[in-house]
Image (cartoon, rainbow, N blue to C red; front, side):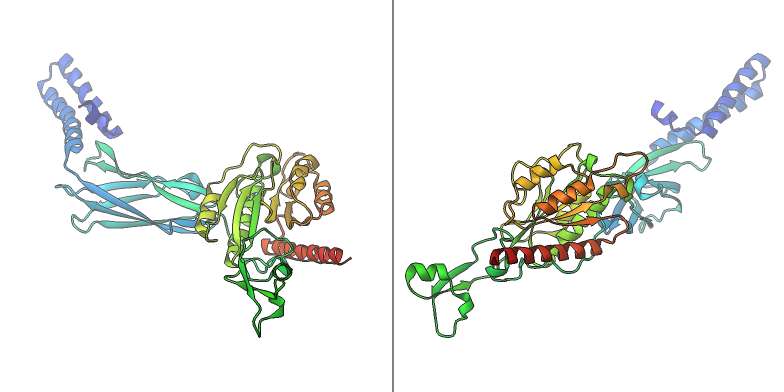
Length: 421
C-alpha cells in the first residue's frame, strides 16, 4: 500500500489533504453530511491509486537503432515499437527515452490510444557531436488514471549501445616509394618494413624475367636462380597515435586530440584499402589494433577502438623499444619536448622509414596555456631523417596527408642519392 501511495500526483495529494481537512471540520462542527463528503474525497484518490498500481496493464517495447555505428556529425534513427500485452488497454501514456546530453534532449511522446494487437511505432533521430560509446535508454512509460490523481513509471526497455566513431576523411595516394601491399619487388621497398618472406627460388628457365634473378642463391648454388613470388608482398605500416592529455589543446569536438584521432582513423582505413597491414599503437607502444595473421583486419575494429579511446595522463612519450618493430612508422604527435622525442628517435634508425604529422597545438589552444616548442621538435625529427609535416586546424586532412606523401617521396630520393655515393 505504501508503494501504491507513492504514485499520487500533486492533484491526488491535494484532494487527499482536502478530504482530511473536511473530515476534521466535520468533527468540530458536528456536520454528518460534511463527513460523508470527506469520506468520499479521501477514498477517491486512494482507490484510484490502488487500482492504477495493480491494474493488469502489460506493455512491451523494442528499440532499434539504425545504424548502430555513426560518425561524429552524422545521424542515427531510433525506432520504438510499443505494444500492449495485458488485459487492459492503456491510454494517455507518456513515453520518455533516456538520451545522453551529447546526443540531444530526451524525446517524449504521448500515446492517446494504444492498439491491443498491432501496437504503435515511435521514431526520433539523434545527431552525435562527440566521439564515444553512448547508451540510449532506459525507455520509461508513465501510466496515469483518467482523473490524473496517480501515476506510475515502468521501465519498458533497457539501454542500447550507440557507437559514435571518429569522422573519416577520404584520402588519396600513399607515401612515395613505400611499395606496401602492391606486390612490388624489394628494390623499391627501401627497408620500409620487415614484411614476410614472400618468395621462393627455382632454377632459371628460358623466358624468365632477368629482373627476378635471385643473386644470393645464384652465387651460393653456382646456378642461375630466379625468384618466384607466391603472393604479393604485404608490407607493414604502424600508425602511432599520441593521446596524452598534456600533448593536446582545446576541448570538446574541436580539440586537437579529436583531430588526431580522426586523422588516425582516416589513415588506417585508407592504407588498409591499399592492401597495407596496419598496426595502431599508442605513444608508449601499446597495441590498440593489429592485423590478423593472414594480413586482414576489420575496419570497424579500428573505428570502435578509437571511439572508446580515452586520453592518458602520461606526461612524456615512453617507448622502451621501436613501436613499429622495424616496420614503416607514421606518428601522429602532439606537443612533445626534445627529451620526449629523443626516446622515440633513438629506437628508429635512418634505414627505417619514419614519417610524422606534428600538430601545431598552439593553434588549438585557448586562454593562457603554455606554448609548445614546436620548432625544436620539428628540427629534431628532420635532423634525424624523419619526414615531417605540420598540421593546423584550418588545414584539411587530405591536404595534410598529401604533404606527408610528398615528404616521404623527398626522403626516399635523399636515401637513394646517399646510397649511390
